[in-house]
Length: 195
Image (cartoon, rainbow, N blue to C red; front, top):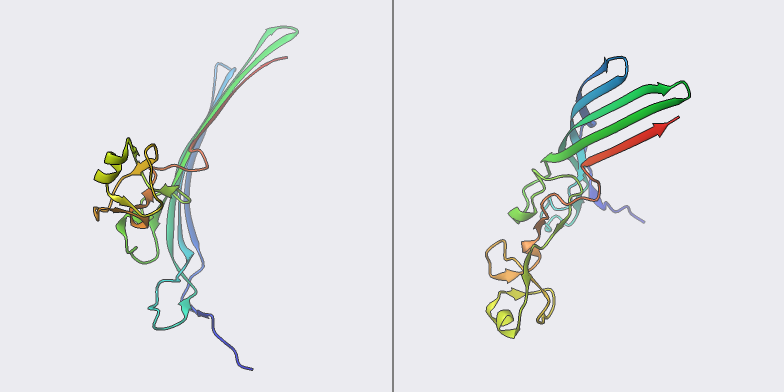
């Protein structure tokens, strides 16, 4: 019984690199207000990405992985805390936190066949899909619109934009949904305590 190679080996990869810069300061005012500010920038390179489509199908074996991915991440965190003794039995504590962080793919494997699907310049795990152009009003509107290959459409169904200009709505019109993401970029909280 022989052995079969399912993936082409890649012996040229490097271990992932992380370059990071963090700046921050803490400040106390009037012996009651504490302010903290932190900012960061991180560049991760040599991220392993699937190289499935790097070889022609003539080769018959897919490449395994390639270490060409790169992601930039940056953000800011602010916090403030105010503490004051109001009476001998009552203390007031107020606090607020605000954090904002974003990442961006700066290098990706190969060049996508369809420019709309290029992840460079977009966020990691960003939502991708078709963009709406409204709803089909009636059968005349459907007949005057570009063909949608996903299903038979009826009045009231969503009409999608032809983003690549080929006059057909299909998987080649899929694009970034303007930064939609399951993880919020902005987080904040406020708290009030009376002790």
